[in-house]
Structures are given as structure tokens and as C-alpha cells.
Length: 122
Image (cartoon, rainbow, N blue to C red):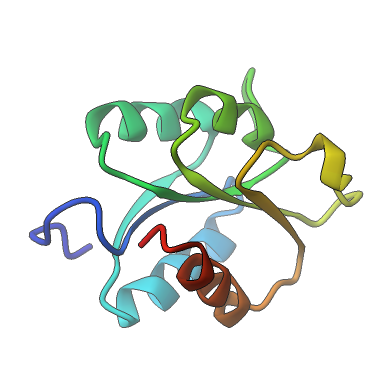
């Protein structure tokens, strides 16, 4: 991972317990010159967000192993833009935290980038 770039602009943690999917997402963002951090669960993501407070975009799965799901992650870091993905039941709009969007799996990573661009978070 190209981690010599300053944190903040075009930086995203990818929080996904399915390793192959996470690798594909990471590769997609890295090919577009994003600085990408990987986390297999919400606890790992929290450690990244605590360490790099400048992060403003998080891409997370809803259902992951551990005590916290992707939706609860947003409550810990309100300034972030959260893109929530799931291959299970869709998340109702009213259940999403503020500044969060839901995308069902499989999803279009180009659509994720458009949402980030529209938000001005990167």
C-alpha cells in the first residue's frame, strides 16, 4: 500500500471481512492514487480512525465478526462519510447514520467514487 501520501485527501479505510472482496476494493482505490488502509472488522477500523484522525471517508461492510457492525462505526466518528455495503438484507435509509449511504453487494465502485466526489469528503 502506498502510505507515503499525506493522510486526509483521498484516504480510505476499507472495512470488509471477506478478504478477496477487500483486496479487490483496495486495488481499485490504489489504482486511482488513493491511500488505502485495510481492516477485517470494526475494531481494526477504529484503531485506524483513532490513529489517523484526518480520514473523512470510510467504506464498510455492515455484517462483520466482532462486537461492532459497520453502522455502529459511524457513531464513533461523526465527521466521516460512510459508505455501507452488504450482501444481506438492505439497510433502511432511516437506520443509516447521517452522511451515510447504503449500497447492496455486488456494488459498483465507480458509483462509490461518484458519491465521495459529490460529498466533497475527499
